[in-house]
Length: 196
Image (spheres, rainbow, N blue to C red):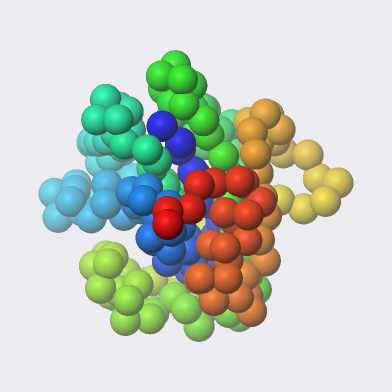
């Protein structure tokens, strides 16, 4: 199985570009909110119970995708690149896929803050992610996450590079790109198979 991790800051287009990659490859989309939304009505976001369930569900989905023989899985993630815990979280998936003889690659999306604020409350995004429908909270959350390092920069070494250095990794500035254009660049850079 091929695991493609699409990462970048909130509202950069991870889910939309991921969906387009899937449309062209036959891979399946596993966007991060699929493991967030089910538990929010029961446990507060970030609570120990919420975190345990979300992490366990994500891991089980990857395990089952491997077991089912899926050709590929596109996983979206807001990755704090300076956080060792985030790197270790992703390394767990990488180990699962490698252990089954699969491959892993990374697509990094970057866009200006102004563009991401504009994308943050689109109808498509809100339809897929009910917890984002409180627009004031949603906008505040996007800005709060700016305290983390969510994109790579030339010459800046981060804990994330200990993982990225060992896999195909493409950084796409998609402020001015359509999701189709960004996906095409990712497929080309990573050499991913395109369905006829």
